[in-house]
Amino acid sequence: MKIYSHPASMNSRKVLMVAHHLGVHLEVTFVDLFLRQHHEASFVAINPNRLVPALVDGDLVLWESNAILHYLAGASPGTQLWPSQIGRQADVLRWLSWEQTQFAPPCLRLSQEYVFKPFAGAPTDLPAIDAALEAFRIAGSVLDAHLRNRRFLVGDTFTLADFAVACHLTHAEAAHIPVNDHPALSRWQREVMSTAAWAACDGRLPVERK
Image (cartoon, rainbow, N blue to C red; front, side, top):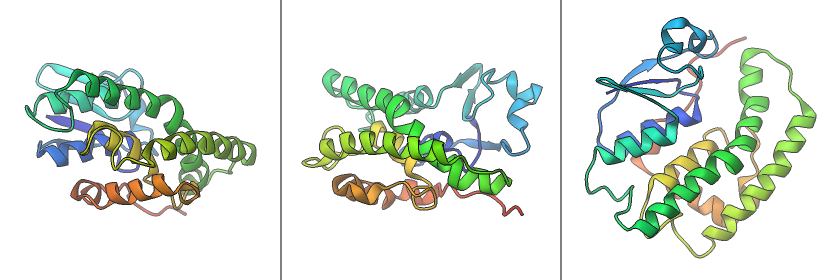
């Protein structure tokens, strides 16, 4: 299986973390987003949305990170990352949907303003930062309340949901994402960060730019 990704892409990181956790080998092809390689015809033929990650496995070409997570779990029978009970499967899907619609947008905006734009030499947008902080406070409060009496998002072990949501905190410190305002969320983040999968996929920008 081949994955097209960029190390600073949170959605790429979630796929790489899950693959590492499952012991699935992925041949990684680096797509330089800063050089706009995701707009080149060769990559657009793989993902017309011009986004990473994208997975190629034989004749299968798959984009959308959460679909890729499901495929990796399906290729690993018996994994606890995808529960066997239908109710817990639905619960994982709920958090995967919530991650994309509620949690990822403010985390991505803050990462763009505080990490990616300075890296690329672009100015920050202060009103966008304020809006993203307010959106994160709402989403963070939802997640914090859910985790107050739970160790994981679904059930009593890691699932796809934990890695999918946590990946958006890759740049939390540098992006000034106020995780510490939410104690249960902060505790859960530390637990995810203690995994070998997190350590193996550090998410740092590959080079320094002036």
